[in-house]
Length: 211
Ligand SMILES: N[C@@H](CCC(=O)N[C@@H](CS)C(=O)NCC(=O)O)C(=O)O
Figure 1 (cartoon, rainbow, N blue to C red):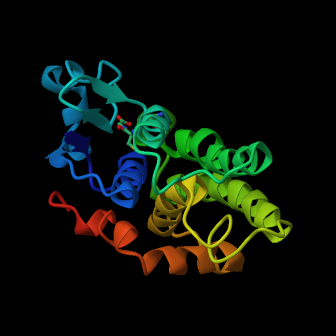
Figure 2 (cartoon, helix red, strand yellow; figure 1 turned 45 degrees about the vertical axis):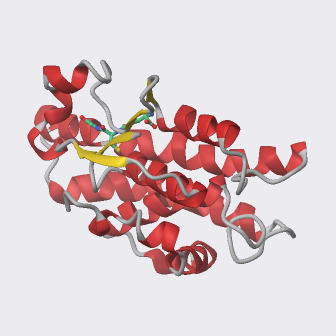
């Protein structure tokens, strides 16, 4: 398999974690977002959306990290990223969606570039923008996990799930935008627990060949 990735991309990071948790190796192909390589014809032939990640399985090229991670879960069911039981699965999927649908997309590079270029935002404004939406999402995430009797060392239970796969890259991004993580002790504890696992360590931005 070939993984088209950028070290600092949150969506690439979440896919790297999922691949590592499943024990699946993929050759790393760096796409440098700093020089807009994702917009070049060569990459658009792989993903016409001009976004990373993409996963070339040899049989097909897959895009959209949620779709790829669901494909991984179906194709390589163990270890499972979703708990058993429809109610628990809905809860874990909701936590993942809070990050994947409601925090990450509005802090994405192309949004920030538009804020800079068309709306004159400086770096302080960019940090404030990202801080607003990360804090809004993390406040709700922290409240949900605080209220969940099934919470263990991770977002749900004592093994990493899809929720952690989405959460950890967003914590990484929060730090990059100078968001003070002390406000969310439960999320910080989960970040610490994940940070002890090789699957997460090896997926970290600074562990990538293009870092
Ligand atoms: N919904 C897509 C989003 C992918 C995405 O936004 N990727 C970002 C990096 S995290 C990207 O390639 N950005 C390029 C740009 O903003 O121009 C997914 O989950 O795969």
